[in-house]
View 1 (tube, protein in one colour):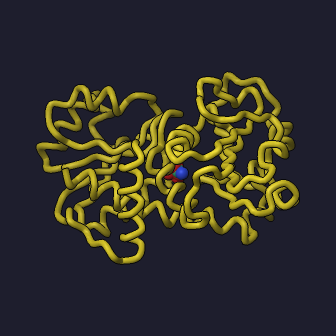
View 2: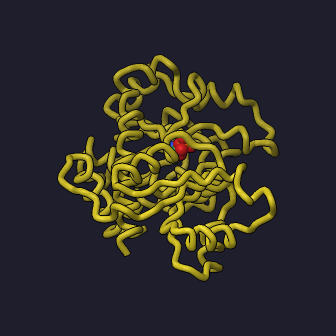
Length: 287
Ligand code: CP
């Protein structure tokens, strides 16, 4: 991602949202290949495709010939000859898209819908759209991401994008959820100190399905890093509250905070996902 790409996608996403832009790619075909579960990303990519007038195929991996040993590259070559122009892929495997692109012999387009703990670019784009709708220019703004940074693809893509726009990125996690390889950020292990006077507080889900090798007390984690209205009001009363979803109620965010006015922006993030994914699909299919 570079600044020009991001600005172009966001401009088009906002134009789709306001009805000022119409599809220029109707009639093309996109397939959804979700090798990991998803609600927001899959549904919004599907709806985005339909709103653009695309043919949208649901590639159900468990019912496909993957189960018979066909490789991903062979599958994609076959989909290309069947008539698919682009495939939206979610996978748990870091680096899968890059490796696969390098092996493809035919020009089928691949779109990253979240990969391992490495990247989730359309989530970062929709988060950026949501933040700028609320705050305008974000240069110099304090944006604090709290939680399981180590296992979060959302955090990695957001940090990359936010650094492009000169934000003051703070990360808050216990040692076992930190990733010291992340650059251009300020780390905290204390929630109050981290969120103090933040413009944005972005909470992340603790990805317990990826924690089998960690030895920690989940209850202590929730006590120290879970956010509620009292803490938010005390330390960052003007912050907007974000979360990529899925939210684990009363773990990273208390139910009373999630159901309050402050929690509404999380659903606005989901809404913006459809417009951002329309812009991304149109851009990918226009080349
Ligand atoms: N934020 C996000 O990627 O949600 P899903 O896993 O439901 O797509």
